[in-house]
Image (cartoon, rainbow, N blue to C red):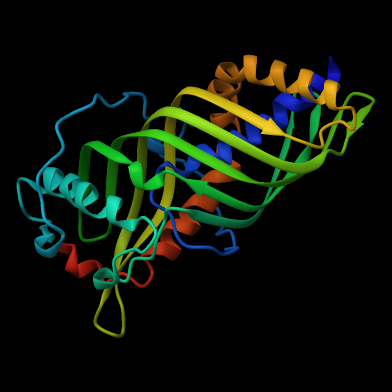
Length: 290
């Protein structure tokens, strides 16, 4: 039973890192984690702050070639939603050279280390060579934004029909007197993801004359419809390995409900760094007119 609880922790890490990819992210790399800004204001204070989940809505009609949104427009939120609708599907395989946007589907996550200590469980998880498929299926159902001269706050209601991820893992987890050091390949399939995402940031004027969008913080309330984990190397005994995985998969709804917000301080700064890396070469003035 101790081994079962350890495996629950490992699964929570994996699902947290994979489910956090429900926002467009950058190309491959191993970014340095920025210093995480402790959320002292009420909006970012709780991992579960954005509580409302989006409803499916009719996609907006828009064109990438005529995509710019005016920040002073009364229809700004709907225009931003149109940008997501037009651009995100085109970021599969090739990307959009006109905006210096690289492909996000498949997305390659080279390496990341996650640490956990709670309820008597301590340890870490290394994920590497992880390929994520399905991000280009992201649908943005609602946008609520506030842009000022000093920065912006954006709230998104999104859904993702399916997300698949696979790669290599290595864990070192202690529970009481038991220690597990499993490693091997893994695959995660996540279906029907709905999330409310809240983020803030600023638009910076660069010496080149272009403008660059940068995020500061990110909070997300994620609701996973269903998920399944496959992994080899947890135990050398194949039957025991299959039994533990069956127990983990049976408890995945509870793992996602508790594990994703519990590990937010691990994955949120990494996701912010990857999003900023993605937007670094993008001349944001082609999309947002001040």
